[in-house]
Image (cartoon, rainbow, N blue to C red; front, side, top):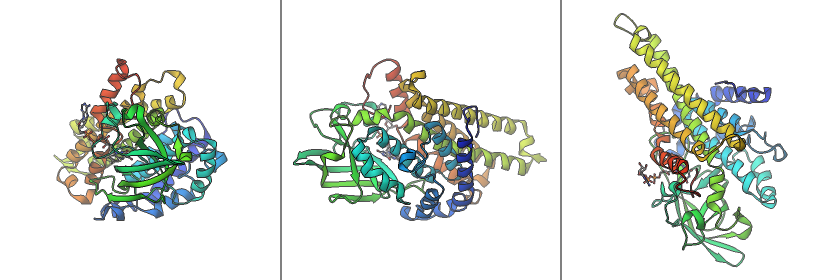
Length: 402
Ligand SMILES: Cc1cc2nc3c(=O)[nH]c(=O)nc-3n(C[C@H](O)[C@H](O)[C@H](O)COP(=O)(O)OP(=O)(O)OC[C@H]3O[C@@H](n4cnc5c(N)ncnc54)[C@H](O)[C@@H]3O)c2cc1C
């Protein structure tokens, strides 16, 4: 996983810690947890607590708050490494990494002092962000001229929130949420929505369904239900009606961490394909000695290396925008990695023959996981559209993530 961007001993030490964590804590538990029928049983607090113990959970938090202040590039590398052990675990952590970064950028000093000390100490502290609604999926990414249905009405001292968010990663597990809510119903979500900080125990806020997912099962996704939920003025993040720009500001990291998650799954699939091709003998020799299969393994490697380079470049540019960042970098790397992973998943299945379809080889779990990011963090097709709009100046101020 190391590449030309890995410069410092600190980064190397962090990656070694994560590698050990994956080997000892994640990989052995992953197939067992994945097999549970109830999605809530697939989630493991034990893994989160172990991640806390070794400093991974709070890695993106600044040192003054008790974290490591890790940059976006190192974070992308960590997310990939976690996903080689299990995609769900990588998502639980990646959401927490990225939301801690958004919070540090967008929170006032008072909000930081209120939230970070408790979050840093809590071994179960994970974070979530709620934007998607049943009637509003891609629209939030493409800045369609519609408002969010979930809205906040001004009341004395704060806001009263009503509505429903769904599909939210860590939705039923988080201690703190960032929530995008319509505060001006006469406007679109791009210019009439506000980001709120919502604490888990706020009266009027409850968890609805926990979604039963095809893959990425070690992460939970849930509905967030708001019924006359009072949130004080102090919990407005980044200004009233400025929610879209808080999110857009952070799109590059969101996209690269999503890409890094699915890339980790592609690496795991490739490793399995290589191992199998060396072991399985057909036509009188191991599969790897058949030219077609050997070439296919190299093509898989190319897709992985190219996706990783794109992700790393985008992660670095996210922290150094002055060096040529544009909005395409916040949309395309995840799409590329997700497409590569999906291709690698089908090829890995093919190389395993009938064995790949049997649960015992573990390929089918990875195929289910690889499908997650065709849609998550924006459907690939709409990300292409978003990048194209940015390229041709069609949306000067998109309300979504890129
Ligand atoms: C595993 C997972 C985790 C997620 N985690 C979170 C989370 O933590 N927080 C959160 O807020 N959301 C989350 N989401 C939601 C995710 O962002 C949405 O699923 C995604 O934006 C797509 O919305 P949708 O599912 O409603 O699909 P739709 O918007 O209904 O899209 C359906 C199809 O229509 C196409 N389409 C839509 N609009 C256009 C258009 N204008 N032009 C051309 N084609 C179009 C799409 O490409 C797609 O093929 C998660 C989703 C998943 C699957």
